[in-house]
Amino acid sequence: MKKSLCAAGLAVACAGAMAQSSVTVSGTVDVAARRVRNDSLGSLTSEVSGSNSTSKLIVRGTEDLGGGLSAGFFLDSTILADTGGAGGLVFWDRRSTVSVASARLGELRLGRDWVPTHLVWSGFDPFSTLGIASANTFRSFTASRALGQAFGTAPESQAANPTLRVANAVEVFAPPNLGGFYGGLIKTFGENGTTASGFTKGEGFRAGWTGSGVHVAAAQFTTRNATAGQHFRDQAYGASYDFGAGRVSLAQRRWTFGSDRTVNTQLGVVFVVGLGQIKLSVVQADQTGATAAQSANDARLVGVGYVHNLSKRTAVYAHAARVHNRGAAVFAVPGGPAVSASPTAANFFGGKASTAFETGLRLDF
Image 1 (cartoon, rainbow, N blue to C red):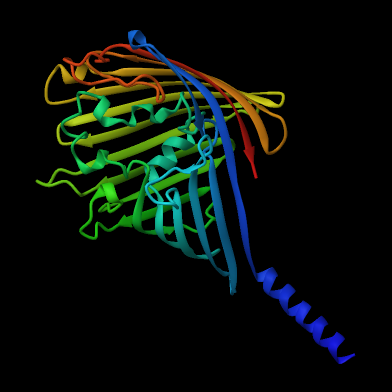
Image 2 (tube, one colour; image 1 turned 120 degrees about the horizontal axis):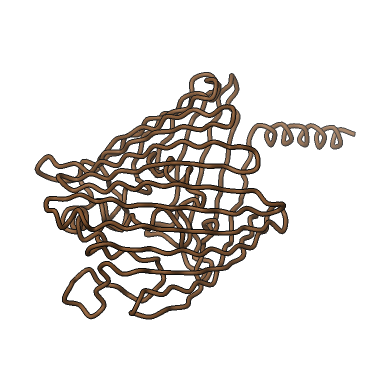
């Protein structure tokens, strides 16, 4: 009898502990076949990962601390599902944070996380900055030619590009019950490292409002790794309206370094059709630099796609996209024949077009 009572008491205690804390494992496996043609340089067919949703592994947990407080961690790693490899320079490349949150006061978060400008920019892109129609196609600063010397050689354009994620961050977020308003601040510390190894010195913010189908948001992140007082400034803002059968959005992202500037303007539309979605996107990259020739190096991306949901977790999709370069710009859809920004190279791509098609399967778990 005593053993039964002890066992029952232990079961109740365990149940109470489980009710106060939890750990979950989730993620996505997304693989597609892609074909890219870079004008006269020819075509290339490949298998790629994460064209509709990033292939990833997420481990997260929360603990109820009582009194309206909770603690949590979030680990998020890119998976190269087509090869089985890890996708980042570090294993938990997408996010690695620990936090304390209060429903009344907000959240304090520490670790590696997304820069606020990317969250705004990707939030208004029908393709979520993924695949061949991604609004991040013009994120390759070295391909711009106009900005190659400024952005291309600065730490901001290296592997751990702070237009996506930053390490060593301290973030504070506003509480959730503010009538549709949300916001946050971020500060990162260089720690005498380099941006290429994930050490970015900078700060930024994000703010927005949602209600009655309307969403407006703005963000900024300033990187202070450069010398001579020149800082890389990244700004993003946009607005969207959800009309029930779909959504229309308009957003802009600006990169500035010294006298060089790129302004990306995006118009997106999503239509809900039965179990699927039709996606349309146009992104214009306008560049200005120290010379008139640099200002002529613009580009435009046109993308269209269809996603058909087989269930709540599984979908098939198809995307098509075309990038048209002006002047000496050499932007291209990823996955095609190698291109060069040097006019003397045999594969110089300035002013040419890159076209692509992909189709794939996505499964969330």
